[in-house]
Image (cartoon, rainbow, N blue to C red; front, top):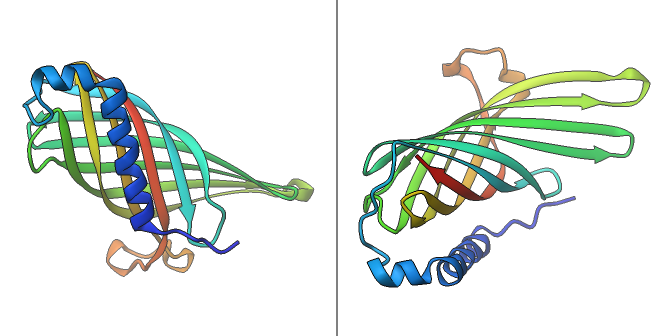
Length: 198
């Protein structure tokens, strides 16, 4: 089925959802300290997330995953994440485990409401099980860029939403050196996460 992805519409929806989070969950603390006041948070956070993936040549769907972030500086974080996707097509089951590493840049620092830019790379492990005992696993390298918003409800709890545009290497160049690999537009990914900070 052909994708009907419209990035501006999804980004607008992401903004509305996060604004709703702000009004519904953090309005009292935001009023007390201000939306753009600095937040003191720990060195790392861990959280779960809902993931919406819209591949270029497939059907969009919701999946789940988790993320771990290190916050060594006020303007910078490093994220590692893993998601799980399962798709059934007739008698064939496709399972994908995207493992991503991302660098997050907070241009305004860690404010109560913090926009950020992100970019990074990922390894996409895919297992296909089909009729007559067919079972094949492959992995591909990919790159992504995007951005997001993070709302700190307290020093120990935050909500975030992200958007990523993803490029995956072509199957034909899978065994080539990194310099010779070829990449193609592969889709879009939106996540909504709940994080605990330590």
